[in-house]
Amino acid sequence: MLEPAWWQRGAIYQIYPRSFADSDGDGVGDLRGIGAHLDYLSDLGVEAVWLSPIQPSPMVDFGYDVADYCDVDPTFGSLADLDRLIADSHARGIRVVLDWVPNHTSDRHPWFLASQWSREDPRRDWYVWRDGRDGGPPNNWRSTFDRVGSAWSFDRRTGQWYLHSFTPQQPDLNWDNSAVEAAMHDVLRFWLDRGVDGFRIDVVHKIAKDPLLRDNTEAARRHDEDWATIHDRVRGIRRVVDEYPDRMLVGEVYLLDLHRVVSYLNTGDELHLAHNFVFLHLPWNAEAFRTSIDDFQALAAETTWPAWFLANHDHSRVATRFDDGGHGPARARAVALMLYGLRGTPFVYQGEELGLPDADIPPARMVDVDGRDPERAPIPWRPPSVAGPGAGFTPGEPWLPLVVDAERLCVERQAADPSSTLALVRGLAALRRSMPVLQTGAQRCLEAGSDVLAWLREGDGERVLAAVNFATVPVPLHLGAELPRRARMALSTDPDRADGEVDLHGLALGPSEGILLRL
Ligand code: GLC
Image (cartoon, rainbow, N blue to C red; front, side):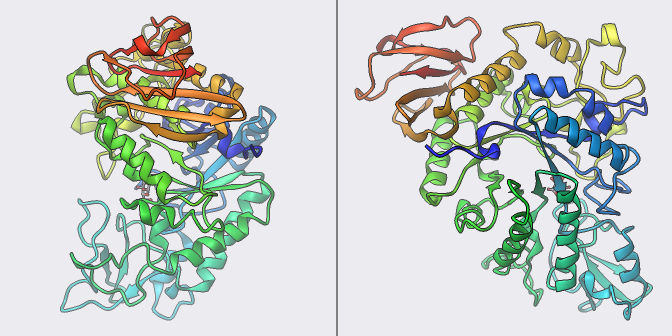
């Protein structure tokens, strides 16, 4: 087996900086807060952290509206704080990946202010300006945020409309203009020179649109994203990153069609990894998961490396999303086993390792334009009964309410409890680290009935059998006869399951249980 790259070995952990840890008491997380918890990240065995945006921003979309690509927002600290965080992380063998938002800037970015100033400004064409049609916007494109409606806003000063795929405060850059492309490449070099190990590319499929700006229709392919020019653009980005050794690109390819997703990976000179949103949107159903995993494998080229994730800062958390019947917490544990046990890179969203549910946010405390506050609640570090209402996240007033059950779910409690979800995720990371077959072994899904997802990992003389019971009742494990009768339990999501030798023929999985067995 080839030596895996760092971004293949173990988990990439997503930090949402506003909600990770607050060092200065303003109620919002910051870089020094992250730096103060590097021991936690080491103990979790993460290979890398990906930080959601930390650049200066008016925070209309909480950092995904960037007003200066080459600095740090004072809410989060300074460039010097980031340099320190990179150095301290590297000293522990943890890589640092930044979020890069190439599709749009903030409307306060100097580029947009100039562009908006006059039709003659040299920056005018850095954004997408058009005359209206019949007194309305230039075409029928819609913002990704339902609440916003049309993707166009009218600007009185110059009498034209500008395009924004998200809020009106996030004007889309014009990637058809090569000066924009060059400027954005320089942004990458700025961070690569500072030692950043890679980028998560925000809505990468959006940086190529039909230059004729034709209407979207029900029947035809969408014109406002994933246009044919995308692949050359991604290749251009990859070339910049390849000027530096050992860096990585992961794209937020938010396309619900695996054929399209793998097209960003299969050529080998575009993205290293892509977030697979088909997987994220699956129902809790073993056959659905199996089909999706098999489909990805069937469509992927030999060199294509999968990535698995089921949570981020834009979607309801696993423990809540799959909580029907109260099974959310057990399913969150099974999900962790899948992420670490499948062939591919696990992406873990902060708090998933604690099995956190969404927080209940009263309407008056909702601050996000798209209602994504519940999954963005701050991390509870210590019991509120000891540390106060900030639960060790902040000595001040947290910017969003914490989860109701912070007392029981907080890091301090879980770290002291060998049966906790945190202990399970630490165990999974350690097992993956110690077993090359879990990192790079080949993978094959097995026939295991309609309730059980089972797969085999094989390589270099090692074999691991993984199985997850999606049912809420015990299910006997029925597998093909090709497997040996005896195996060793390496790990179970059920803390009461004994390890040691098991007889595969008599084995039943508990409700929502996931197991890893050495064959
Ligand atoms: C991505 C981000 C999301 C943001 C949007 C616009 O989907 O994950 O948080 O609102 O892009 O930048």
